[in-house]
Image (cartoon, rainbow, N blue to C red; front, side, top):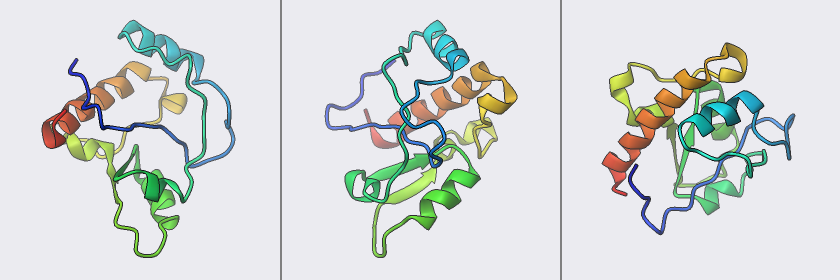
Length: 125
């Protein structure tokens, strides 16, 4: 996997508050670990209006998150908001299905990895 540019600041946040401070779901940790990703230090945080000022681009997993994030947009904010899978048109998908409900953590990771390759292609790494 390519290294990210040193000036990339990445973070993850949810639009809901029901898991604040919790680690990722254990099956997600296991699926990620099988691919060499260590999620054990992550803790859930909620997306906040200040993220529009903190980040140049906000990527969401699905249509519901897109609506939630756009509803929080401060007036005049130029921050781009898009679906993660906009960077992986070859998948034929627009939304990453939530593996918490589908149980398909590997399928979700396949889509996320494809989108991350697309991000590196689209924005350079």
